[in-house]
Amino acid sequence: QVQLVESGGGLVQAGGSLRLSCAASGRTFNPYVMGWFRQAPGKEREFVASIRSSGSTDYADSVKGRFTISRDNAKNTVNLQMNSLKPEDTAVYYCAARLEIISRWDYWGQGTQVTVSS
Image 1: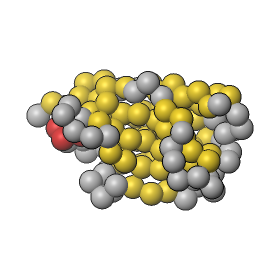
Image 2: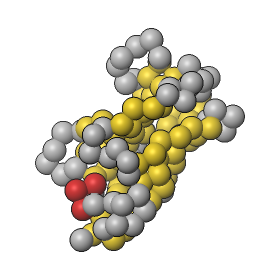
Image 3: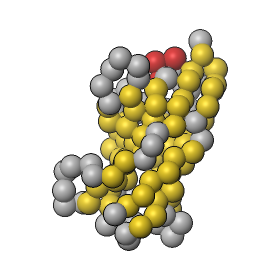
């Protein structure tokens, strides 16, 4: 089992920045792909970004160039730096984890609210 706890959400004006953090505990952190997803009101949960233990990253087109995902394997944390925020980035953001060899995201945090005002 992997336990995930997010922090860093809040209210920010459009064009501003926020940094989300996710602390992982439980099983060894390294073999896991870590990711961020988000869910806006009335919409389905969507992929935002992911990072492998090697440091290889992947981003949704909607956040490329604005968001940066990073991880610290020694501290078992993964971060999401969000710049140039837009009102459409408003959502609950979830940290997630999956084994590298499995495509299913098995572990989820409780979520943290990000609200971007116009």
